[in-house]
Image: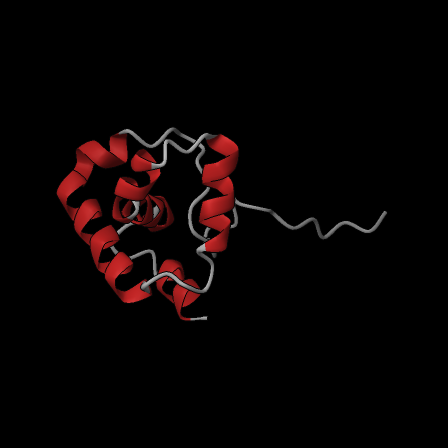
Length: 100
């Protein structure tokens, strides 16, 4: 639950989840490159990391990446990229109150 709580704060960015992905890939880049992983192997490797990731270290790295990238990093995120949920403005998964 702690990971979701951190992501939902939207600190330091509503797209912290993207920086967290980069931090995790950066931490394991040596192994990924050394083993010349293709897409399927990389996907399997990343899935197998579940429950074995040093969350504190990767969150610190993600925060540092986000701060270092600054506005230039935010400008590289394509428009319409979903933020870490929840969103307060109701623009994501808007609810319909109409009864059909």
